[in-house]
Length: 293
Image 1 (cartoon, rainbow, N blue to C red):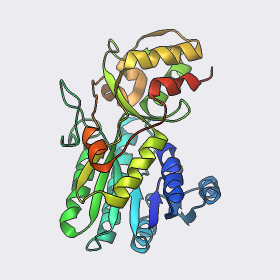
Image 2 (image 1 turned 120 degrees about the vertical axis):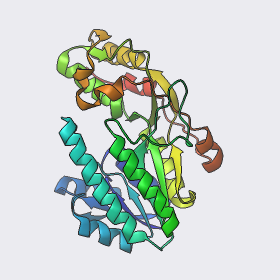
Image 3 (image 1 turned 45 degrees about the vertical axis):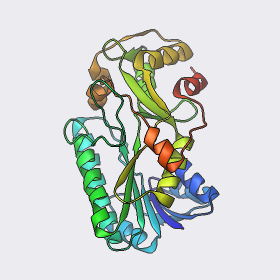
């Protein structure tokens, strides 16, 4: 299959491009910078120059492809306004990609986050939140999945709060960055809230499986670790960086503070059963042992 990929040089995207190429697919990936273009070429992918707001480039890439994997999202999380701009950009991009595939029965796989459900681990059947700090992403992905009714094989791979590799990435990565900046490996509240996690290379396998075989309009959970207590994550970060570990205000983590404070374990039982996905790479707490001071 010839696959058009956005976000192909991020933590998840790098692993997804490698997984697709390794499975015999061909890849054309969007590249905003010379550095991204070089990385994609070195990986063996063709390059389409453009940014996520280049809607003409997105439309053309999707129309020429046999399948699409959409991973790109702004890296500016500095304020609620910046996060909103990123969600607006993602919404416009997914609308264009979806319209380009209407009536084709070709696959379009996008990324979203696992939902949170009070008192239990969320499952693939739980709806994405439509309110709160990232509610717009939930609404955008829900609208995309509805394109199944217009003969697009849409699916969403829901990612946990931390997608990691070599001790970096996701919410654990943001916690580590905050620790380096403030001199404290901190966690909101009492730290008993749980975050699900997955290794990037395990997540990449699930994106490939969804592209190849997921039914239209379905959602899947890329969850290897159902829920690590945030204070346990902070404890490893503090030990590896030689920093004290303690509770800190939610504001330490910027616009994601309220999300950091939520208890949000997630299950991937149905994903494993139906798609045959089996994560094999290190857990989050093991991977964080690779952090260097």
